[in-house]
Length: 472
Image (spheres, rainbow, N blue to C red):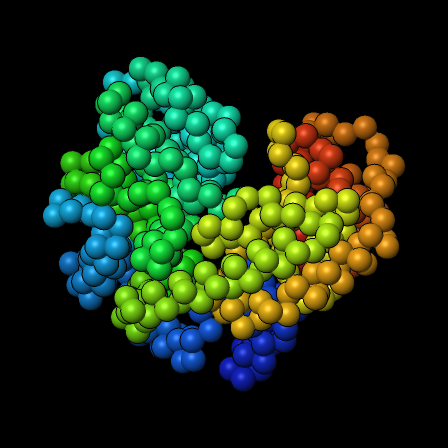
């Protein structure tokens, strides 16, 4: 364990060497073989541009735009670009946030605080909506109404039935993260508009690629602020705008709709606190890096990157379709390839793909849905995609040879029985004690068998187990 506070400072080159050594154990953020967490356009020079831009504004504080007008200018420019791309009009306003989760929390806050007369405000979402909505409801003490989907998309009739007098916001996805499908936004927005309820489109995942996919001919439904009834929309710049993390945009159709997003407090001896977002102090670094990224790539560049992504999706989807033992679980219409196993243990398959250099994201079973493997496809994957098919076939064969995972013997578990001692014992017994997470099939099998509340407790305990400094 490296001491972050040594008795005497160490030379800069040594510190940088230590950082590079630690980074050596991470998954590859470039190269088109990691299908989650990071977004790689494979553009020469873009990383260096973003790093330089970040450094220029790293110490600028977004707390007071009158003190640092450069940051205000960049934020307004980013919001303007997002509004132009996402169907905004002359009245559209927005804010730059730290990520999709913050954008969704603020959308829920704005809707909640616009109705102080409602004692128990409610949020209506389809079951495929991002978990960040549940986080927003938990933090803001908003009741969450989760509506079962029809197929893999929101059911307008069921969503309409869930809207009541205390509903302050209805939300849906463009596209859903798990499966990459776009909800029927026009139908849902029309229902919300008729009932006088705000409607938010979570386009955090796809907001910066769907418009370009549509320009390239993809048959996707309308989803943005141009749709009557859509009152707000969010899009992450650190996803398909390929900016460094973390920068997201939250747009409102009008200033009146945004006003309740702000927090203001003057009843103390210090400065009056006025925040458009959750943070007060904000580094200008990520915002400057996003500004530089958008300026560098440009509209034509994003259209080209979307074309490369679309081609990569086609190649990967064909590989899945042509390989016995796996199948496409959802139409590969956006930037996601979601596959299910057919006669092979899916979690073993994920391990075998990782062993061949393809790092995927296994998803647990939910309700009637089986476990799946999620691939977030970026422009960088276009160059590596042709080699996926033979590796997939080889991984399927290896998974069949290994056979399915059998659940190991476990003590009776409930959320209340999950203790630090139990987690430490389970981690050691499941082979995680050494910190090697390359073989996760047994762990994923255990988690898949656990009901959601127990899974939450187990993973919370495990994350807490990992996030402990070494003492002594």
